[in-house]
Length: 112
Length: 109
Image (cartoon, rainbow over all chains, first blue to last red; front, side):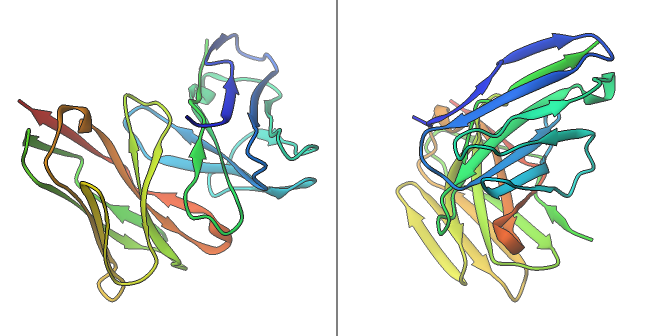
């Protein structure tokens, strides 16, 4: 069973609200990632981190921000949610030298 | 640009063998991974090929030909629980993964 947790699992929120999606892992992985996935589509990398105080933007432009103050925690924040942000957000981690990512179950966000 | 191509859907019967192909065009290639995803849940890592050839893990095998920018996932002795989406993903610089659009596999009785 994956030791990476995302909360909330589902979220419906109004336009303009600020939200933070939580992601925590207990495996001591140094590398963490956020992907965005629309139903039936590919995963797009929006942010990644190679360790504490290291964050980078991914290949897909995103209006979200991330932080990495602790190894185990990698939250994603949307300052002002819009309907275009409606999607599933998947968090993943891996240990340096490993090839496989461990994914969380995702947060399905709906902005109305 | 970067692109990965895989069939959108494949159907097979229980007990059969199915092959899911993936061709890629990326700037920087370090290996090809495969992931399984059930009903939009957490993708699960299946295999990784960094070098040409076949890697076998139980009922699943994965193949890579770097000269052809091509790989495939082979699933044998199909079971109903294998019905899922399968994604190929290129490992690019820094260990980042670039995913294909996924192949939805339906296994029929």
